Image 1 (cartoon, each protein chain N blue to C red):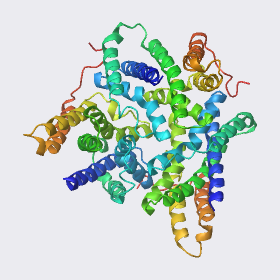
Image 2: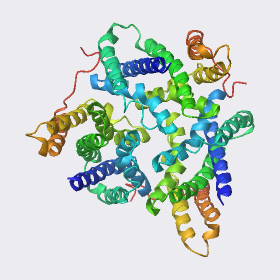
Image 3: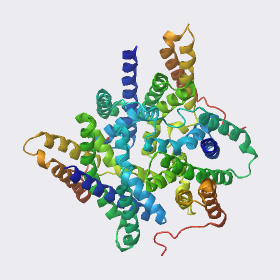
Image 4: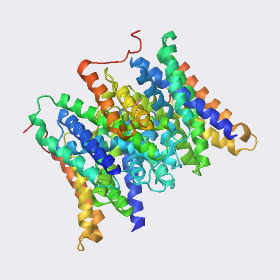
Length: 203
Length: 203
Length: 203
């Protein structure tokens, strides 16, 4: 089970690193800018989570694989991005996949460190959103987080969904993939159909 | 004494959470946006303080009450904000109350962890200002911190005031409320009368 | 050797504090704004490094000298900045010196805590750039980091240069000054001659 989590974790880091590198492409940075934003976006959320949980070491400090994945994903993006018709579209979808993976992984890691369900949900949401917030803040862009479509809600669904599914005997074995799918489907629906919650003042 | 500090701490978190939710209202976010900014603004300053002090656990990770206060304050703001005539005015005053409470609480907690008076003062100022800096940076607004009126100075007065009053036998028993009052009165005067320090280049 | 590193470290903090105070001058803040930006810029990078490495205490929490250097540098800048013809020019050069010192110092400290060479290089780059990123983000300015001229590359040269030079018997004794000089010369050439890497999309 731990090796599955590790694999999904590495994948999530790589996907977010791609979204960071695509944001660097939108700003027309050089290849080191791609790598920098790949690293910061890829590991940002998990770093915040580990610092707040007080884990013994931050995950990428003790395991070089994560940094190499970020660097590899950024370099690959540098060469492949010119083939894309819409950078921003691909960035949005990479961000959505990363969001779905990280909200569940962050919740799992927080629970493993003894956090209460409430704290675990907040940690899941933070892991999922922090990387993209850093990416967008550094690039001086409106954070995806503040966009009109459902975003934080999808992370919340993934985090709480995992906790509920994990607690039910019938679904515990599949809690991780099911919760990831729930979060991704909600975010995907939000992108495709412009789903949104009622905004303040529009009532 | 510890239970008084805990109570004031929870109050300060709630007040800052309200200021965060009001900032979300100004940006016309949805209710999860209110909760998100309530949490980030409410716990941001204390989180930075605890990470820098190296406390065993960050305060809200080991005590669910803080997160519930943030969520409750944000939801209440969602329903009550439409009754306000000026969101920004109330935000400024909630921020001022939070500033006064947190600069003293941050100093007290840093001293309790063995920090030198200089470090305790810096921690107090950081606890008081970090939450609002995150709030304003995420919303891409000019930080209150950089506004023309006295702000950091009020936090400095509260932090140093506490250390001085706490060291004097005559005032030690009342050091906390007196220092909070000093910081609040200076910030209140700054808002009401436009008090400011001389700016660079205006000499 | 340790006392040399400590000295260079204090110097680097002071130089970055000056760049922070100069940024405050550009924004026409008051003297506390100078001190605040002096502190945040001076200690920001090293603070991020220490938190990520999980050192026992953050460097400036256990040694008051760093904060005093930041405060002194900021106050001196307040009085001396009016004598400068171009604030921004001096800021750029102070930033360049700080960058060169911190990328090597961050690498050294990370290695001393047992980080792998890859992590040590990333820590060096982070130490060198984080302070200026906070400075520019708080002031809502385009980060120097994203400027067209070579910046991160200079930090990368200093970090990797140190690791290579330190591993070679012929140069190990002089690895620190040599690597600092390499990083500084590359950044200086970038400022003077507008050196840049090829940007994305300009191929």
